[in-house]
Image (cartoon, rainbow, N blue to C red; front, top):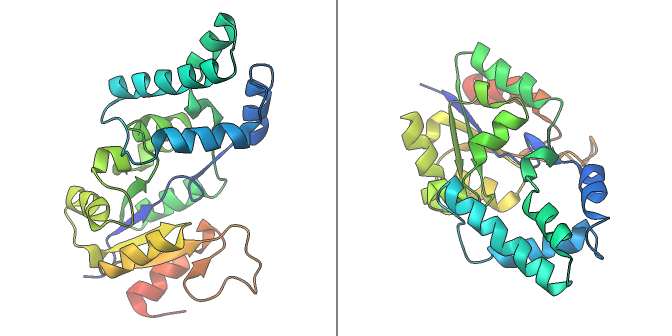
Length: 223
């Protein structure tokens, strides 16, 4: 039957974080930069799939910012501003994201998002960047109950789509996640937006404008 759906990773494939926005927000509040904040976030979320719903997510964030505020002995006002931070405000859609999602729909394919971000608010994040209306199914590691490259993460999406893995084309910017998809029988490609034409070898694409060509390769064997 061929490819019937395209599954996209979120961060690095459909979206990116606006670093100037983050720097402007955090600079007046913290004595460390965005990279150090990200390291602390990674430590906070390490070993967990994250909160299962958005009510738990609010508490998850509050505990994180309380830890940061205590570490740096922040004022109550600075702590309150950290509590008010909403990460979706810093998300931006890549210019080709909407183009690719719309084209997949035009070709009669279903669309899905599978992110390893450890929060439940994947749908809200896609809505914030104007992409949710062209996505049929969306899961994060928290809502899927597993993180890529664990098979359960991928099958959560394929089952929701009511499709078999071999009926799905998968796009991710992490090599191990692409390998996990291929191990289940998906057609999978790595998106490397920083690659030059020469560096984008077999199984690698530079952007989502290659989607229709990839579908032709998978559907018809045309390169």
